[in-house]
Amino acid sequence: MIKHLLLLIMVLWVNTGHAQNITIRNFPVPNTVSAEIGPLISGQPTPFWNDHPQTRDEWNLWVSQIAQGTIKQLPDLREKMQVSVESTQFSGVPGFIITPKQVLPENRNRVLIHFHGGGYVLNPGEAGTDEAIMMAGYGQIKVISIDYRMPPDFPFPAAIDDAITAYREILRTYPAERIGAFGTSTGGGITLALMLKAKAQGLPLPAAITVGTPWTDMTKTGDSYFTHEGIDNVLVSYDGWLGDAANLYANGHDLKDPLLSPIYGDVQAFPPTLLVTGTRDLFLSNTVRMHLKLREAGNIADLIVFEGLSHAQYLMAVDAPETKRYFKESILFFNQYLAR
Image (cartoon, rainbow, N blue to C red; front, side):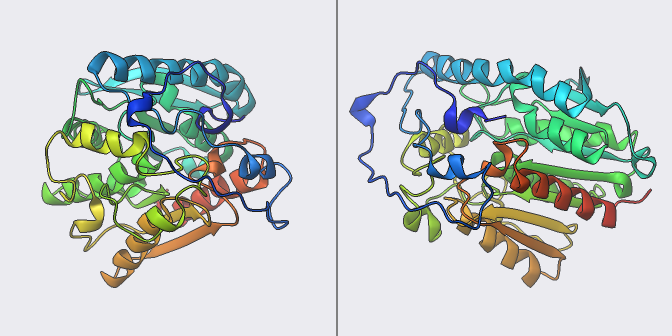
C-alpha cells in the first residue's frame, strides 16, 4: 500500500500567496535499498506539502480531502493484515480496537496503544489506523488506536489530554507491565509527551515504547530541518503546511512546552524506547537528539536509521522489506520488555 502522504493524487488547492519557494534537491536512489522502496525515494514531493490553509473551514476541508484518500485504502489493508477493527471509547475518548485473527500466545494478555501521525491535524477517525493495522497484523497482537482531538476545533492541550484519559482507562484493564505504546511522527511525539504527563501524575509507565521519526521539537531547531529541506520528499520543509500546523495546534502556547516538544522535558525513568528514522528524514535531528537525551538520562534507548528514507516512508509500502523490518524490530523490542 502506498500511503497518501507521498503518492496519493488528489485535488487540493494551494494558497499561493503563502507558498514557500524551496529548492527541491534530487539525489540518486541508493543501490542499498529494496526495489519496493526505491520508487518512494525517487518520487516527486508530496503534492500538498506547500499548502497553507488559512481559515477553520479551509483546514477542515483540506484534512477531510486527504483523509478520504487514505480511508479508501483501508479495507484492502485490513484484509491483507487479517485484522478486524472495532470503534469504541475510552472514558469518552474515541478509539479503535484492532484485533488480528490470530494472536500469538505470548501476546494474549498484552496490548499496544497507538497514536497516529499527521502533524496534529491530519488523519482523523479511521484514517489514522493504518500503522496500527500493520502492527497488529505483523505482530499478531491487539492494538488500541486513539482518535485524539485535533485543531482547528480542538487545539493544545486536547490531544495530550485525550491520550492521558484513554491511558488511564486502559490501565483499568491491563497492568502497565503488559502495555506498550507507539506511533510515528506526531504519534511518536504524543507517545513521548504521554510519558511526561503520566509520570507527572504518578501513573505507572508502559513497559516499552516505539517512536518512529517523532516530532520531538516543534520549533525549527535541529540540523536536519535545514540540511534535509528539499531532500525529504514527504515533509519537504518546515515552512510548508507543517509549520502552520505546529502553530495551529499550539494555539499561542510556547512551542518549547515539553508537552508540545518532549525534547525539552525531564525524561528521567522513561521506559525502554526504540527510535526509528531515515537518512533523508526532515525529522532525523528530532530523532537522534531524543535518542541521546534518553541515553544521557540513563534510559534504555535503541536507534534504527533506515537507508535512503524520507519521513515515515517505512509505512508507505506494506510489502517492502524496510516496512517489514520496522514492524519486526518493534515487535521484538516489545517482546523483550513486556510481561506475559
